[in-house]
Length: 135
Ligand code: FES
Image (cartoon, rainbow, N blue to C red; front, side, top):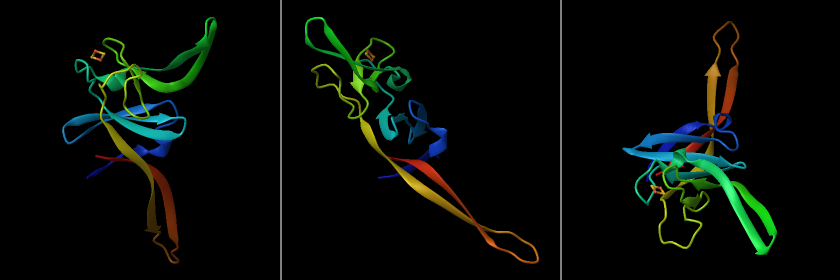
């Protein structure tokens, strides 16, 4: 398994995405309410660039006339024919065996230590959090 540095955490705020190319494959990395997910940018229906699709949610109903909007920003709609996928697990939201490949994403601290030249020098530490894709 390999690792790919996608970006700094600050460059991928909630409700945003980045599409990266890793080993010849395009993968979309999403920040959904502060959690990170990655999906292959290839719709299993007919091959559309799925990760360019609209982020949406689900309308659910327990009884006629009652509709509740849930899971806003957790559903990805394919730009070609509108199939919808759960970003959290890559499955379609309707009963189908079609599924888009998912990847693990983790956050890692990057620590850089620098010495400043001068008569007296002191170590300076810079910390960033990085979004790491595992493929
Ligand atoms: S290519 Fe994605 S729904 Fe058809």
